[in-house]
Length: 166
Ligand SMILES: [Ca+2]
Image 1: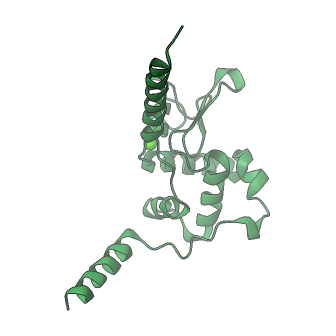
Image 2: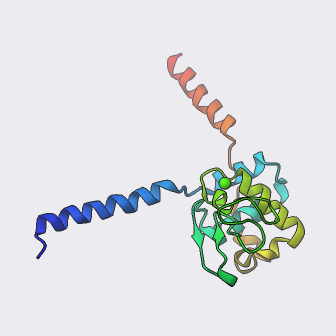
């Protein structure tokens, strides 16, 4: 029989293991996503569609891995890029010539490159999440026009500091 104190220690351990797993990933804000897309050269016209797609596919969770799906495939990251066609598990490959695991880390610049390739060959319709939540849903698209760039944010902080010391 396990005593209460060891139960407590086990619970703590489980808690830390779980939080550790969660720290690994990153949940982007809509503005984070918009900024990353913009920096990678995605046109402003489709920015809200892209962010809507990411939200509906992954909840903007960079480390989300789902599967197994069709033919034991898995889907990776904010864009849920699938191992069946676009990347390979454990090694570089697929249409994006990429390792799937790299689509589940915090850096989404490579994910964006692959997602744009998917979009240019198959269109936004490739993503079920986009079809269900974003397609023909103009009012449902996130408004990311007001998102400030990091440079603008830094500038605002600097201004406040300067005002403070004057
Ligand atoms: Ca990545």
